[in-house]
Length: 364
Image (cartoon, rainbow, N blue to C red; front, side, top):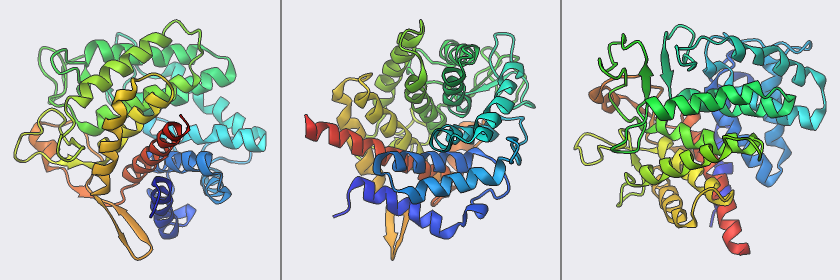
């Protein structure tokens, strides 16, 4: 019988066999689609130590990092195109090749001059005036905090903590405890509420990025940082709210999280993986009560019902494709895909954390 990590390996191998490293989509671009998938691969490598997976990651990074430590195929105008830099730290640690450190030192100052709203909140992309998106905390957050700790330049850490504080203050709904997908401080976007500037909906994957970002940020946030307990409390509070909306029968979460009873709403794989991953890691690291282990395991079992094997290939179904901010009907009408990279990446991240959680329980 396959273990949790065996399934992660099958998911990774299916895409590795399909895509030579230079063809990993979107080819010729340094982008979070590959970055999330490769973060899952990196986590699998951390658990099992199988060098072929490290080599695949390094070979992909080397397609984009030049010999003199510059980054190619990134437009430097959106955090989506910076997220894969998270992968560079391990490669530098294992090789001690200075060009990997140099690429971080060359690119990361972009954070210090990023466009912000009047409160200091990062625009999600440089053309999205005054718009904060939840997605940005995952795309920019762990990278910024890791680099701040790595370099000793703690202003990067403080910038990221500010983003979480602003999201929590301006994007969180007190009634549900959930956070809206986006916030336009200027209230000018078509989707923005005229009084609050908030997006209309609680989109699953956008909320899912948040707790995964938080548990990863906490890996690098100094123990004595004055806002560390704030981050932990945000994680606890969000997970408590999110678990209120977990579907009892399937163990999964819906595309629009708080409207699971609606006839046209549907269960979505990637957000379920992200929630399960963050819950399992939060328990393992001591941030969350162990009572949430049942939520994580139930979510994992639910996602498995949306996976299948055909020959030597493994597929994850019901993954929402990339999505902008839209109205309720728009989220429900979004197409689903199979083996979308950020869906498979989320699946592997979940499997690795579920496996670690199971190992912890076996030991103790």
